[in-house]
Image (tube, rainbow, N blue to C red; front, side):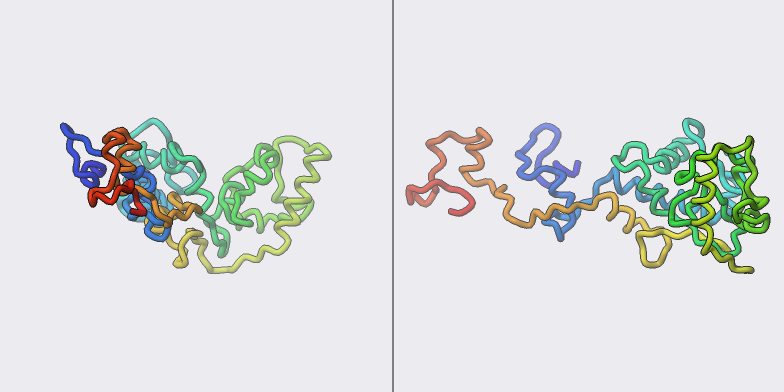
Length: 263
């Protein structure tokens, strides 16, 4: 539909597309027309719903989702392959299905810790903007309580040999070295009594999710094509596409020169 609008065609009569659609969808700074890519824009809109599920967990609509799809650790439990089309689409966005960067959403959402009561020690991206589950996957697999909060870990004592470290079995020597490394990362963590934990969107200065910042991230391009596209319907270009014959390439002013973008 968009293509027909730009080139003046219709279902019965297709006209020449002078510039590829990807170039038209580039932002104006990069030489495009700023036409939105529907796929990426839809992902950006659905990403807003994922953000709202995290931020507005006490709202009525989110409680309805909790009742329908379940919850885990006080948060909405996401699942794949079940529920309405909207719910399945939101889950696809959360796991990055259909995009080159599968973690575009989750890697740009981080957790700022206050008192640590509502932040999960292993699975939330609260330390160095990455979940400890990813950095220390072996320790996460061996942990007894995988949903323990940062506050509970701190209260139990997360120093080396502290009561916070509870494992399903005795650790091997190389696994104990991972614990030492993890404890070193926790050395400078200070919890703030009475301060609530909050989610942060890394791509916007307001630290809140915005569709604009998400769309810009998904469509970012380092290629600047503001130079001439050479896509004018000159006779040279028409000949290149097999629309006119060689004998028809001369300029209409009868100057004897070939009509191209420079003449």
